Structure formats: C-alpha cells, structure tokens
Length: 321
Image 1: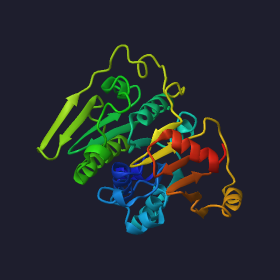
Image 2: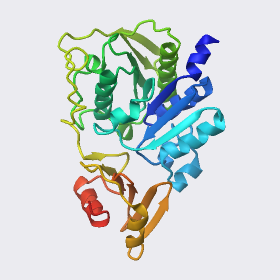
Image 3: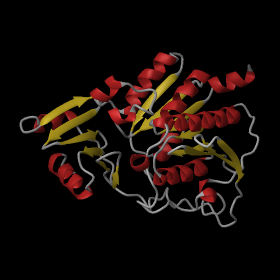
C-alpha cells in the first residue's frame, strides 16, 4: 500500500506520444500514477495506427494532435488521473520548464537529438529518466538516475549523423516490440517511484522475433561530458536544428526565437485565398497539395514534401516568420 501511495503521489512525463510513449502513458495511467504530462509535437495519421495503440481512425481523420487524443483516451481509462497535454516540440529553450515539475521522464521520442537534450536537462535538474527505443523487431531500455548511474552518453557518446541509421519509416517496426519496450520502461519507472532500484547501471536489449533478452552492464566513462564533467552541450543549443524531417513526407519548422501567434487572426487573413481550418489550437492550411499545421508558438509541420527548402518557402509564404 505504501508503494501504491507513492505511485499515486507521483508525476510522470512521457516525452513523445507515438508507439512507445502512448503505450507507456496508458500503462502508467492504469498503474495509478496520479499526474501524467504527455508531450508531443505531431498529429495522428492513419499510418500510425498499426503500432500506436491509444489512437483510432477518428483521431487520424480529424488530424488531432497526438497529445489531445492521448489525453482524451487516458481520461476514459482512469478518470482519477490528472492529465496535462502539451503540444510542443521539446528543445533546449523549453525542456527544463517541461520536466521541472515531474518526478520521472519516460522517453517516447523518435530521434537522438531530442534524447541528448533530454539527457542534459534531466542530469542538470536531477530527474531520473528512462531511455527507450525500438526498430524492426528489437528494442533497448536504459534507466538513467542522476548521480547514481551512467547516462545516455555513456551508452551512445554522440548522436549518429543524420541519415546514418535506419528509421522506422525505412525498415518498419513490429508493433509488439514497441509495447515491450514501453512495458520495460514503465517497470523501471515504478521501481524508482517505490524505492526499489536494483541496478542503475544497465541496459536491456530485446529482440522479440528471435526471442532474445540480454541485460548489458553499462560503465560510466571517466570523460563523459554530461554526467562526469557536467557539460550540457545539447542543452546549450549547440547542435539544435530549426528544420527536421518529421515522419513520412513531412518537414517540421521551428522558429529560433520565442513567438506567440494569433492563429485566429492568421486564419482570417488566409481564408480568402487558401483553405484553412482552426481546431484544437492548431491552424491547418491546405494549398497546392500541401498541408501546413501551424501551432501557436510558431512551430509548423509541412506535409506533402521532404524538401526542407520547399517547406521553409511555404512556411514563409503563409506564416510569414
């Protein structure tokens, strides 16, 4: 009962609400975590549904932000849980504010750049976080506890160069392995919340197709920039990009400065020349076969192209930043 009370008193953030993050959020809600903060930058698409179990065809047809659909489902699953949806892209400017009021962070992201930013912020603020990733039929989970365990940069010293690793879009992912990774992450989270940390210097590797499960011992490197030397290079924004590929045939654009868009005013200006729809704090602009989803902080997802230059041109033309 004491352990369950600790779980109820806890706040957990899932950064990313795709296949791993949404499954982890559901398990945490069903376990009785009192407060969940769900954070994601993207919208639900039909291609997500084979592996992102919280969402259905209605969410995809309506193009809802994932965190809006996620929060809706979590409240149906456990109405006692406080759910805070955050539609945003985690970056060096906002990550500390996002995680400052939670006890543990669960990694549901889909890229190393965000994970390294999260690693820096969690170490700086003393927040445990659970790294997790899945591709094809295998996955990796590693609990990271500041001042007690190695960090992500002891496992992966620096992010692989863009394009150097396969992605889910290119090689696919078995839906069962994303749930397995989420299950391991939630288990590690519950251990920490109930004071039952067993081995904080480990990474678990699984391959469901080959029925393999391996626990790897991870040692802290003496020259680790983050957890040993206290250098938070990614949190300082040295390696942050303002243009990134975002899912299938889409580009995300993020302003380098803080902005606050008046989406209602922007919609009013554009509705005479292009198709616009304002819903759930997102302005959808359809033009020439492209769709631009614009958020209040100036971030946008340009669908219909993987060309960053074209995406930036469309963004400048219709958003004007």
